[in-house]
Length: 217
Image 1: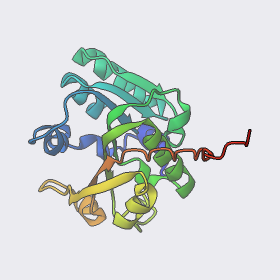
Image 2: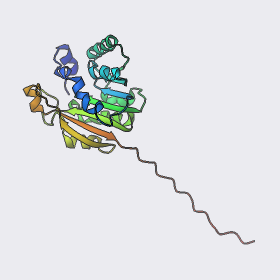
Image 3: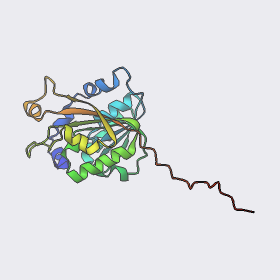
Image 4: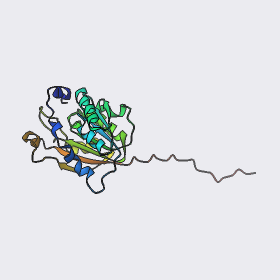
């Protein structure tokens, strides 16, 4: 797992330079785009995406375990005149942070792909628990098998294995742009879009058969 706290202290956070508006256009500026509702930002960093969504009318919760970017996020929201619920917590423990289920959009732009298998499973369980039926989940990940300098990454099969039981993978597409650096191009960042399947209906409890036999008088 990458030492995000150390990287922020060193001022090395290239993910903070992503074009936020461009990231959201395929989701919010398309036919059939979801109406503003509740959104969960997993690994929110300095809150750029959370504040952007809040300015578009979404009620956003941002979760991150590192205090420095969260402090920036709080200041950003104040400066932009929006309210965001900021939670300092482990994304692997989403289901234990006291959040209310029912989020219509959940997204992770570069956090889960750097976690251990156990933490990925914890994050996936929390996402599934907190998502509304039909919710959209967006995950951006580098390709699997990167070296020590980058997150370990995830590919299509990893995503399906991690989330496939409760989520339907609808789309995957490269997010490399003309201004993407060479090292990022080699990492092949990919955006995955999934939809929360409706929970299975509980099995009905069989009832005892009614007897038509009556005792003799």
